[in-house]
Image (cartoon, rainbow, N blue to C red; front, side):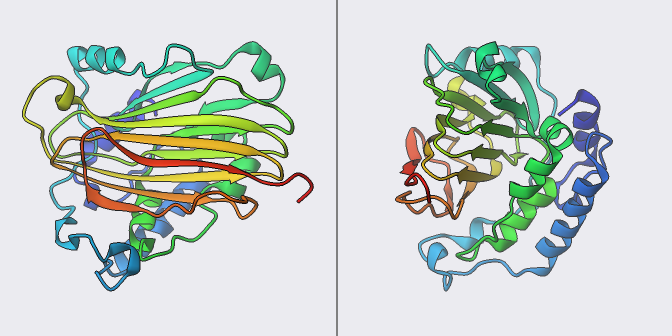
Length: 291
């Protein structure tokens, strides 16, 4: 997200004020966000009668305190960049603070020549519109999570788009970091990963609260993320997720997998407070060639 668009969102204040009109996004995407906001407002909150929410404290889901991301100070940026190094060798890396992309380590020229795309969402929706629109949140949320999927779609403004063409294998993992960095901050992380036939890729996402790494009191925060994981016939997608949110962070994660995926462990949304150093999602799936 550009600095101009980030300032627009910051001035909007509460996330319950709805989508922020941004010059960064095409008209069709903003139309989708307005429609999603209406859906969010119309849908009821999930209850414990919903299977995936039966062990959750739905009463915690008061969104009134939460705001769009605030200003990132220089010292905060320095700590985030220092702590966003999970592996020594990666094929690419993106680092987000709230809704801001603050650093991107690009993929190699060799992978680019083979057609691999590794971009922010806002670039991908403009430069690869057809592919983006085909797969972005194309599958309905289930298990009582439709309301928060609609909230995510209405307010998402940054994230990662990865496309791996037919037969391309990316040997090193791709790392993505998402950080909350201020009191009552919110984030809406999104990963759109599309792999063609016989492609292979590993993606590791890290979700973290800054104050946990600075030894300070951990403020409240809200994260509502969605992953679209699309695997073509014979493709192998390995996705791992770690969470190190602060103790006062409410985090929801909704993962959607493509119909083509075979033997991919079923993913369900997480509806729980942030818990330190917890592996939240780990899956590896492969589709048989020729399906």
